[in-house]
Image 1 (cartoon, one colour):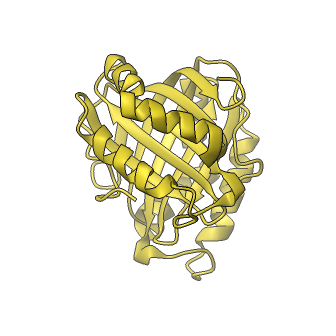
Image 2 (spheres, rainbow over the protein chains, first blue to last red; image 1 turned 90 degrees about the vertical axis):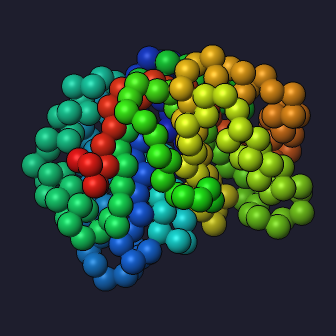
Image 3 (cartoon, rainbow over the protein chains, first blue to last red; image 1 turned 180 degrees about the vertical axis):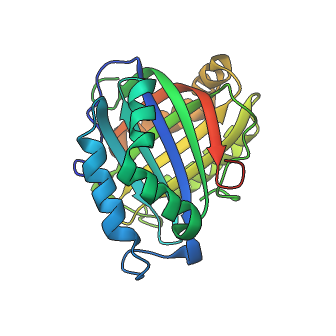
Length: 117
Length: 117
């Protein structure tokens, strides 16, 4: 999980990548398939990309997870997708780590929270 | 968790409500604050609303959760927000169940998955 849990995003509009995934074999951290260190590194690299605004991520014990990352533009999302080390991780995810996944790109138009509703 | 885990959404465009929340006291199911049966009923009622396309939801042991619901239009989202029983649940969520939350409304413009990438 990222720290802090909630992404401190600016006022909309901005963009979101909604990534829902099921780990292969419902694996969790420490399952020995090399996922965790790469996932951790991807989170760290993503946070350094131009246009990165924040990330929120949860995975349950059954292996199903949702990660939402926030970006200032669609170009920033495309650049992160094309990042060389991220491309290697994407290939491993597709081949080994995820039994299934869905990725959706969306434009956030409105937002509110408990404290600023 | 909803069943199936992955929402069977149509081709974009459609709309998403990204709801990230932290349960008060990092509570989980069965904590006795009345959350679980209401959450379950809200999921069931939401699924019957016009324009509902699907839902994906995860909550971790530390009480942080992400629920993404998908809708055919912004009007459908507004109608669900205004639903009388849902309004009561929203008030209880704000008052009691959630230590904090963020809600974002977004237009999904692109989507792909492992099997249809």
